[in-house]
Image (cartoon, rainbow, N blue to C red; front, side):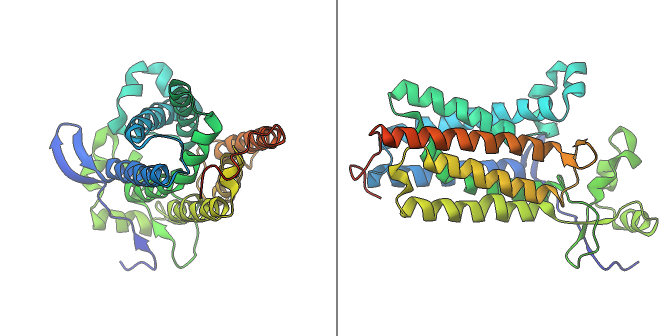
Length: 300
């Protein structure tokens, strides 16, 4: 049977090791994101914009890695799968089964930045501005990994670039049998013919562009325009533009949880980010009026 849309047949595993242990594209995406952040932060430190010694950048990245991983995992279980976690408390450590929440990762990252800034006696907003300016590249790689995994796919659609995601129907093969048929094209075509698998928006790729590349470009432009001189302005801009980008993408993404028939969990959490953006922006303005701006002491 021929189909008018592409079928997602990408294997999320790069190399099988032993048991659940494997090298996965998802893990490599996290590695790429943190590597990109390390390179940017080190560059900014040497340029003098980031008031963190080059020798401390590695420690800052370690703080961020722990914050994102712990916050992302706890956020997913709290926001999206609390019932399963309550039934199985050890689910929190079985990260190979998947399940990370971007909003939870950002909360964990905020805690990590606070702890690092306090340990080095550096203004928190200065650290957060640098991390926020670098983070969209990590989001970009993470969304690409979501696409590779065939997760967080979009709502059904007949747009020419819509894709069939076989991961939509794991319940057809209970007891883990789906893994043996995940790439069985004949079985997948049969499900497509029966209308059991439908073409969907590749919303992961939309998010990679909007939440990743576009956001990175906006923050880079603001930084070069002098936003770094106002502590917290880049942080507020990150929260503001990420939240609106996420809200927009959620309209074509298949929602996990919906309130009042239309508001998704992701959009609700993003509203909280908009509130946080306003709070940070107001604090930023008060810091400038109080003479805490960096002015020209730290070059762009």
